Length: 87
Image (cartoon, rainbow, N blue to C red; front, side, top):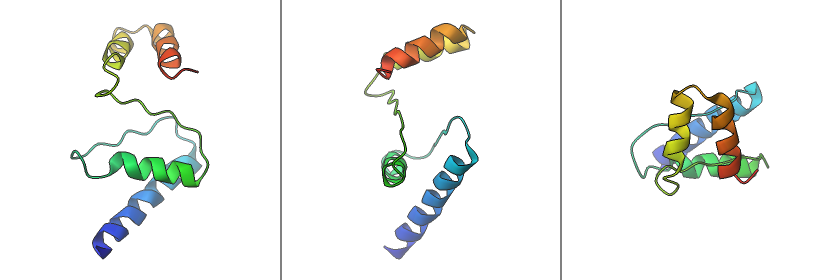
């Protein structure tokens, strides 16, 4: 179990570094069901950071939104993301 805690702290530190650098977006990839979303949510909650989570499995309409980005319509893309995020 200690290995899991070490990995958790290492990943948490990387997320905190990303927050401090002020980067615009964070993309996490990896195997399913290993805790990617959990560690991101927990880290952001601990730091009282605002965040928006897009889930392509639960929110299948997002796939169409991202297709508009590929087509090059940035204004349409950003507006659709705002609507999807209810912001």
